[in-house]
Amino acid sequence: MLPGLALLGLVVALPFLLAVWMGFIDLDQYTLRDWLGAPFIGLANFVEALTTSSMPHSLWLSVSFALLTTAIATPIGLLAALTVNGRVPARGLVRSLYLVPYVIPQFATGSLWQVLLQPDGAVNKVLRALGLGGSNEWLIGPPAFWALVAVDVWASWAFIYLMALSGLQTISTELYEAADLDGVSWWQKVRYVVLPQLRGPLSLGLILSTLQHFNNFTLPFVLFGSPAPEAVNVLPVNIYQTSFQVFRFGLGAAMSVLALIILAIPAWLYLRGVRLDAKPEEAGA
Amino acid sequence: MSGRDAQAVLPARLNGVLIALLLAFVLVPVLFMVLMSVTPDADIAGGTLWPSHLAFDNYARMWDTVALGSGLVNSLVVALVSAVVAVVFAVGAAYCLTRFTFVGRRPYLAVLVFLQSVPQVLLLLPLFMVFSSATTYLGLPLVGTRLALILAYLTFALPLATWVMVTYFRKIPESLEEAGLLDGLTRFGTLWRIVVPLSWPGMVVALVFAFLVGWNDVVIASVMTHPDTRTAAVDLQVFGQSIEGGAIPQYGQLMGASVLCSVPVVLLYLLFQRYLVSGLAAGAEKG
Image (cartoon, rainbow over all chains, first blue to last red; front, side, top):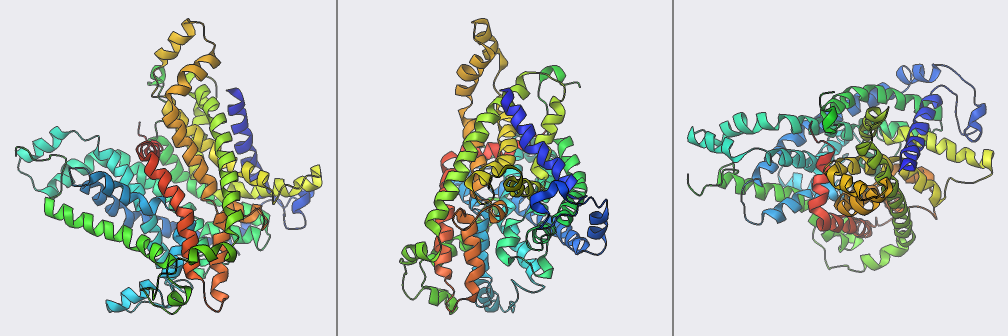
């Protein structure tokens, strides 16, 4: 039993501390193999990350991307949960099918949309048939940002759906029946019965979803490659490129430590909401 | 109101329309993936949406175009080994965390949860540095081996599996174990004979999630592997990026390979759906 605790400490705490240390040394492909001898350069990496590097741009992209995708996925997930909470035909099947895009590995999702978003691909075909024009630059130009948002929403809205559905299942039938007796419309039921009851699980879901979108590396990396087009040079991809393609490992580490400091705000909110401890004798603590 | 389904909030007709729209939204791209996987490469490259003929040979030819065979074996071995190791240690760790009170227990739990929000590259960098220098300091080449990949996945799979087991062990009443202890079982005995047999659904969830850490990963494998230890995910990513330079982009085969990598995961979910869905929600269990 104890080996589990110890191993967990070793494989998690040690890399974590090393990551912080890496931010303070000048580490490139030559010093990497002998990093104990790499020169200590103080805050230079952090200063460079915040001033002359492309990190501020990436950070802005990542924050807006994470907030935007969560904001779009939320109403979809909520509506989806409402559609299968009551008795509907083939409810089990519908619930399973809703999960499919979420379950498919993101590298496969990336390959799929990479093909669909080609200049001659299906997305443009459909858009042009609808008279919406389309774009030849979904994967390379400024519209890439919107392509990434759309694909990520498609791939991950079901997370919000799952959170909302598990929340809906805790609302007692009496609440709805009371509302029915008062003769309220379905919209009032959503507004005054469902949403207030879902506030807890849904707000946790929103925070978690924002964090996951912020940290998503696979989807932008598979869709656009690295170096990424400027419009989709999100932070995880930028750090990857800085570290493993430009070989500025120290700078990459400094960037990821800075990212973590920013992530600490939503992560702290999340921690406060999660039930860390369920031991009855400590319930009051 | 008699006979009305109180849990159905939306009006029936709107409900039906919404389900139809959502299913179309979800399924049209997926069906496209399947359709394109049997479409001749030249058709897709030429911009035809409907295949001129069904090219099932995409599924035969793709094995030569990408090193898919070795990729799938690598993915399977690495993901499975790291998942099994993670679950074994997670069971021990989670048992300590739920049954004993000790200094640092709450921070420990907090770290487990916090780790779910740490960007992967943050932990990948030090792992890569340590593994690269293993050659210098220990004379042991690690980068490019399956072992390196397994160790790296453990960094992510172990906390995840531990948290899943923690949420599961809480549901098992301690009175059962107290009875076992009174009957002369050791602590390890209660874990092995009482808790483990009761918690296999939790262990399945932990195992599947830990497995998916490896199976779905691109970033770690793309720096930790050599061409012959590459996982299927990286094979696909490299194939996808290199494809556009070719005379006829082999999109059909790319889709075939994508379908092949997705099917096992979708099947896993369908098989264990009941347990997995509750496991997904466990991360956001509210207090």
